Length: 159
Image (cartoon, rainbow, N blue to C red; front, side, top):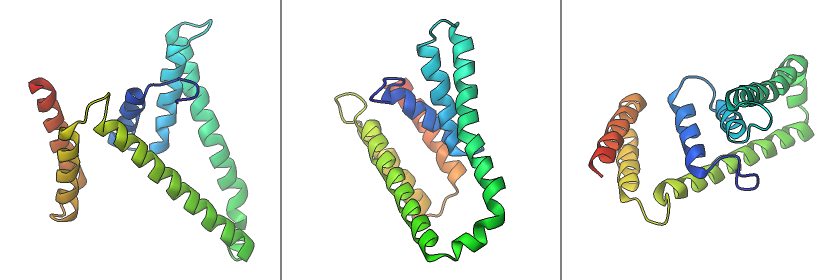
């Protein structure tokens, strides 16, 4: 994102918000990145043709290896999981994935709280309120998302 300039931080935040608000895997945010990145730099194609091709290729290269791993590796998973070397490798991969998710949370949290050069207290209040509603009062996720969306829309109209 920062190296190649395919998307801005705001566009990436929009993509993550879209991926979080729709059913299906979060990894589909990559399709959004492929679409928007190709739209903004269409090359010899029209923006729509380039973006459609970018989204299609991104989806293909995201899921093809996964399906190959599942179909080719599934018969061997139990046997491989019993090997200490493989088990240790899988634990290291899990730790790396958790680290990546934590890094993304910090990066996008910073971007949400400081969208340009100013601090956005509304985002902080909404985040804390959501956390309290989910953890302390055990409110379901969908109502919390709905209230946050409504509060954000109202805040955008007022501010």
